[in-house]
Length: 273
Image: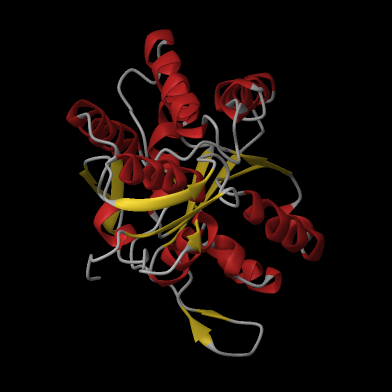
């Protein structure tokens, strides 16, 4: 059994769950890119792959994750090639895809389908969509992320595994194609597996609300956005957007425009927040 997840924290909690239940024994594999942001066109051919890598290089340039786009630490194509190879070599092998109700997991699921369609009947989905679980404190909650589920609760979640249907293998890739052709940069989960798209500046207006008349480190502004805003995404993307906002001349800055801890931002004097 091969388990696919889409977040590093998910690998930790799922491995703990596997230790509790031998029927879950298998390798946990993470798809690392965040397909909820950035260009999607041509992701299954060299030109599109290179274009996305170049976009990530631009986003990460001069920031806390500078150079990560080209250091080989994120290579989903190599990862999925290894998974496909294992599935082809061993006809008894099965694949479980774990996804919670968030744009990151759902986008990763759509990207993944292209590579596993040939194994229809051996590919299972565990989509934790609007399902209640019990927290460590004994409270009922509806998780948006797998890693918020206690390991023992995964033993209940495994009962949700079902084969991805032939219809889903036909229809869902069409949905991904539609999203790719829209050429927009931000995807938001509207419900179920329905993603809607917006331009790259989707988060900018909300991010500006956390810039005040007092000097604040970029990291503090981004942390507040991530903890308080309804729609969020990764801190690397938000640092990129913050830098673009600042270069527009709307705000005062001090320090070097690099890592989150390297510069501070505030409203210009006389501007009312």
